[in-house]
Amino acid sequence: MSILSDFQYHAPKTKAEVLALLAEIGEKSKILAGGTDLIIMLKEKMIETENLINIADVKELSGIKFTENGVEIGACTKIAEIENSKELTAKGYNALVHAAGELGSYQVRSMATLGGNISHSSPAGETPTPLAALNASVVIESVRGERVVKAEDFILGNRKNVLEKDEMLTKFIIPAPAINSAATYGYIGLRNAMEIDAVNMAVNIELEADKKTIKSVKLVMGSVSPKPIVSEAVPALLVGKELNDELIKSVGEAAMGEAKPISDIRASAEYRKDVVGALARRLTKEAYDLAMEV
Image 1: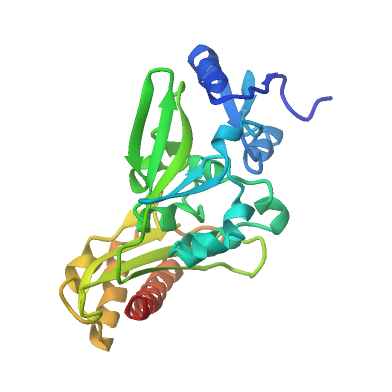
Image 2: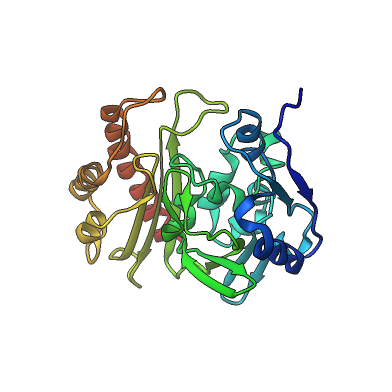
């Protein structure tokens, strides 16, 4: 008896070959990169497919490339490569590096890919929040052409995203961090090993030339809604002001008011709201202090 349902296996070697396959059989296919989520779902019979397209060996889709305007990260880049990139940390992308290091075990991170993590579109995904906070764009391609969407617009809901059946995510474009800015990431889980996040969050703060006044702030919450939530209330509170204890308290309250958590096996909705407030206060203070030091 087979563990997996029968399917046709494809192993293209170039991006063009992948796109051609998707144009032909995309409606009846699943893309395999690291497989840390997909293979489990196939084994558990949560999903079935007639075709499995393995893109792990497509070299065009992997790697970290620094440019004058920021960095480009291929969709098939391993999470472990991001976690271990000293250059990403040195150039201000430490929030993404931190999130990558918290994903599963090291064995999982050595197989899982950045594109797979966001394409899986789990509400508790580790990387969507820092990608959104860092103003990343997602590049999507098909034989019909290329389109670019903001990271926060890629996920539509639980296991749902903007990809059409003939499209694939090919890379992420993350702009260079602004002068006098810093981003932080944090999460809370039930235990310190292999635990899906109860809440995760990323905060990106840019200061004016005086290194005191907040020029912009982007706070993104994960695992408290079917898709990441980009706060509107927090920027309204902070922009144009210097951070103080009263504002920090208000930031926590504002974020809690925007969160829309549910109760499940990992945490109650009430606990998640409390965690949102605590993370918002801590990460906002940390990002502000780091931005002052840049």
